[in-house]
Length: 79
Image: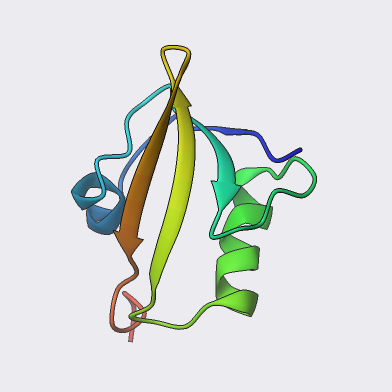
């Protein structure tokens, strides 16, 4: 099952979604496949979602399930 531990947060859209350090992402917009590292997580978003999309995340935080919604940026940050 998917399990990605949040060890840093720099993206404003992740902060706006209230992702917290130590959260463990267990569902990414319905995807619950294999464990991903951060590079694979970003690759999944780039391949399967579009700029400006809103995605659902499910995180485990302090032993409880938390549902989050994150709006991706409308355009790449380095154009």
